[in-house]
Image (cartoon, rainbow, N blue to C red; front, side, top):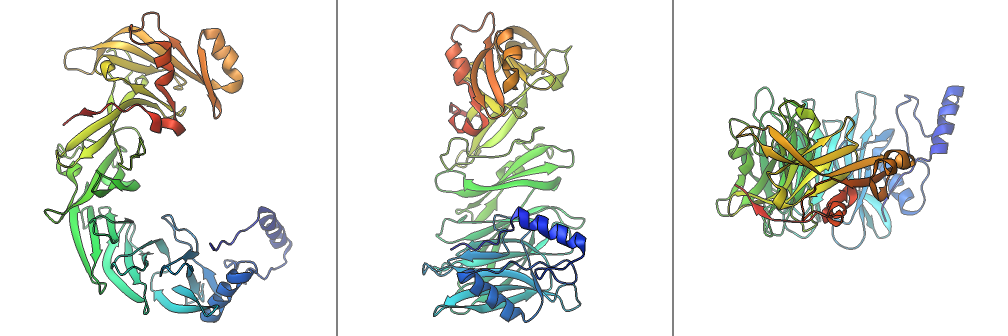
Length: 462
């Protein structure tokens, strides 16, 4: 049973009104900063009682600041006996000199909930909590990042679950961490990435644990110009290798992606995109905020590689779209493999699939608010990014549903669908390519929530 403490909106409203009136409530301490959960029933009540008994006084529950597990009490079957244990995080004697933050591991034994392990840390805040069988003994271990006073640096601890629960200080710090089977050995390993500081460069580490909990790590350099990790996704690089796909934002507010995976042959952690950077610029550098994702639901993560479409010399480049090439990374060939080329309209939630026979022969422009996207044939001027515009192929429009008649129908657009807040339509150009029909105009349009249906046309690029 998952444990969830819920605060109902009406109760919060009543609390606020009561506090304004000057009366006190038993859920809050006199310091005004502590809130205890309302009375629970069943297992929840017993877990709460076990926490109160162990803490021996005033306490406040602590919530992890990042990651997927944000609850202060996390229910998890750690020993695979189909009975969940509770992992509780709290600060005892808060707002005093005796304040300590603890992690309680609480088990149900002979029908009663008992605190089986109690670990405390000098750091008061918890960055994140994750789980995995890191020593391969068949039980689930607990990975906790304790926040430090240094920005973007968290201390990684592991709590090995078993008859005796053991605390392991890995003596490693990180900015973001992820858990997965990166070595393909049937047990969990930990991938950490750390932003550069005044004294250190940006680095990635893969941490593996031996049976006794000792740590072995592998390290590789990362782009030290990254100021923020925007997204870290765990997924397949190919059918045999799991990797971490790290989207970051650099000092010039440009995005890029780095790929981390373990090479079993060389027994090393690899970051091939960074290693092949050109004067510090990665092949995945882009001016748009699109991040990695599994575009075709095959388990392999695709990386967005973007290129500005050509534009007339006399026009503003900002009005012209980017082509996004969703690409996997071929480890054996050490290069990208393009799965699909698209134009993404982030403002209005759709993408347009670009067929291979359009490549290098077209461009696309937006109106002022991106509600209108016009795709035209184009001929590039020599080796520049300028082009001469040809015929209009198709124009797409997005309008508020209530505005469709005035902005869509009256201007000759054919309505395709209502999706979310908008109505979408298209209008064929006067001289579209012979092979491009109204059927293709509709098929190439893909709403964001359905963009896994984008047509896949594999093309190899170096």
